[in-house]
Picture 1 (cartoon, helix red, strand yellow):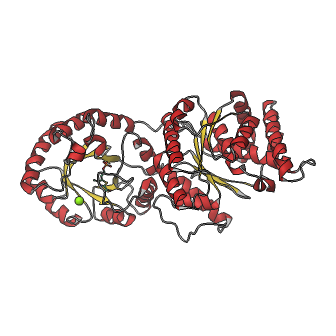
Picture 2 (tube, helix red, strand yellow):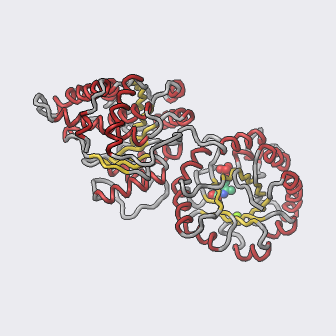
Picture 3 (tube, protein in one colour):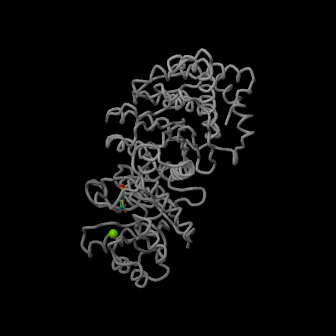
Amino acid sequence: MAVDYSLYLVTDSTPAILGDKDLVATVKAAVEGGATLVQYRDKTSDTAELVRVAKQLHQVTKAAGVPLLINDRVDVALAVGVEGVHIGQDDVDLKTARKLLGTDAIIGVTANSLEEALEAARGGADYLGIGTVYATPTKENTKSIIGTSGVHQILSELLTQGFPDMKTVAIGGINASNVQRIIYQCGSRKKGLDGVAVVSAIMASEYPKAAAHKLQNLLCQPPPFVSAARNEQLSRIEIISKVPTIIARMASRKPLCHNMTNLVVQNFAANVALAIGASPIMSNNGLEAGDLAALGGGLVVNMGTTTPEIRSNHLKALAAYNAIGGPVILDPVGAGATQQRREGVKALMAGGYFDLIKGNEGEIRTVAGAQGVKQHGVDSGASQLDLKDRITLVKTTAARESNIVLMSGVVDVISDGERTFTISNGHKYLGEITGSGCTLGTTIASVMAVEREDKLLAAVAGILMYEIAAERAGEREDVKGPGTFVPAFIDELYHIREECVRGDGKWMEAAK
Ligand code: 3NM
Ligand code: MG
């Protein structure tokens, strides 16, 4: 019989989670609300109590047609005649469990790493519980926090190593606020999760039926930030023909460009937004982000000025934009430079979805290593990768995060994990003024706010507008250096916008 792994409830009888609710009644409510599989997990009760409670739970689950598994204890599973067990790395081995329970039993195994996942798959596990995704008070002694990218890596290896049909659920810190994103970011087009396992999101809820129902509803829909459509391919000719129209549309729509940025570039970012035809707002107050997100614009989260308070504002704003699918860009300024910033990147990436992450080589390398995926031979600092390796890093990071990654440089590399472009426009004076990276983010967020279907196309449009304007400004006779460059650059951004509005796309011939 096919097992539905979509909403897997793992029980917890401790007062910290269950409160004063009754365990069996809570499970009954959860199953009524939509839990599709139940694991009785009790690490402290003696065997007689485990058998007694498991019998009660089994009555409830059997009536609902939902399988019941027992955590760790094959003997209890046998005594009660439930559908299977879930075993951890420290419990009875898979082979023995299978021998005792037979081929029909459902046997799941916890996998914290790729090695553990492959071993369990080879050993004939029916499903893997992959985690710990995010740190959780429910289980504090977990081996490692692997994030969505760690799960993603295990799923893709299962596919390439010959286990395309292996059933998988993710576990650890999953709740209604992140479940859609976790499903989206853990999986890929080729292999996704079969479900999520939760403890506190249901067991700690005052209304377990409603909590399960809400999770089941969320599981049925993609997260709001997933675009409905996109181009399978994107040729140079298509880009050249589409970009001026997109910029013209931006100028007519005047999208809000919400910058949570550092103190140095606020004024410059606002001027760039105005020049390209967007409507800037500089707000670092996370509490008003919901109102701003509702206006339909894009958000730039810039880590240039960082304190714990700013981080909490960033997280609030991220959640507000994610909730309605508004585009969000992360600019992880100086990401690898200090412990605070490394932690900051991790916390932001675990706290929400960034449609695009933009940084220089060092920053993108920090982002790539931020979530428990080990990188080979990486240290912080100056450019060390050749173009081929930069392309590989950008592409694999984007695939792993299910978003877009832009590594800026003399040659920019941008990818959504499947389509990858290099862009070689720009001018050396961009490197001689402050905020040129930050305001590229401002430009991209503004374009993404109007081009919602193909986010990669939107980002490429923003980069080309920005860098060709810089090129034109840098080549002007009245520009003698970085000081005169800044106003000329703002003028050229404005001119390109005007040309687009007039239907004149000749400026795009400079794209390279
Ligand atoms: N196993 P919550 S994490 C039971 O990583 C369990 O193997 C984990 O609880 C693992 O849904 C975990 O409340 C607890 O975060 C998950
Ligand atoms: Mg165990």
